[in-house]
Image (cartoon, rainbow, N blue to C red; front, side, top):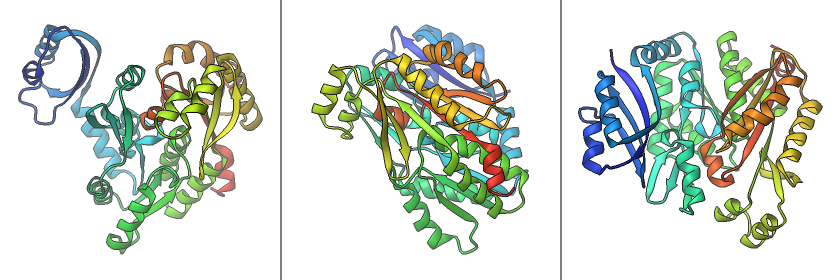
Length: 370
């Protein structure tokens, strides 16, 4: 049996040779180290040996193992069972584990942390937010055209038709890149590109709902109608803790950020087709929570086809203890997920950020006439 393992380590003693020995024999291994922290992705047949060697380097903070046979089975099922396939960007707050389980393809953007540049799907949230708190320079970058094109081709080799829900064109160049490739290489019109106008959880919640619709519907037109109505109906509110991270990324003046943080202003923004727009300002976490509940009650009905996505940065315990119970009391029938916010969003928003996205699937189906 062969295992796929993700490890996070607090290093007591380790140099590059130590970490190389940990992953010896696995050409697919990925190791990222920063200070006394390391993240390792490795394939092994000997879990006992791997764990012993990891312990010899320091303290295991997190360990996740998965039988690769199960991964292959899930891949085969997603590759062969459904003719219409959904692809989206990893900036949509969909985890790689969710994507594998649902048969959803992700295109990653990149995080530049200090001198390292890594796909966002290979970065642990705590690695990003610790770097930001430490004052390291953090920026984002888009995938290269080569990577984008490889992703389109890989999906089209496995599926009759691919519906690509892109991050909104106000945020990246993914829409334009996909349309350029389609014009040159898709004479049979097998790739449908949708400019979602969304990012973060709003994109993710629509992409995940569209996977189920793609399994139920026989025509691409029906899937596209649903996705477009779902994008129109879905909403997202992102609650920031500090403004200085927006200023660091050039999205706000440093003077405005300093003044806002000095008087404890916490803006609330929504990612819209023309960019992120400030929709409210509050003073503390209690006001953030009240506003989130007000938005839910105004726009969402409690029924089984109502989807709610709560997203955290470095504050999952608080979100689970304070926000999640209040949402559950009001929405007992709805599907509620809690996931990390897209790291490319987190890189601009900073530690302490959390977000709420939601969608009424039933209404989207009705308006799409499904």
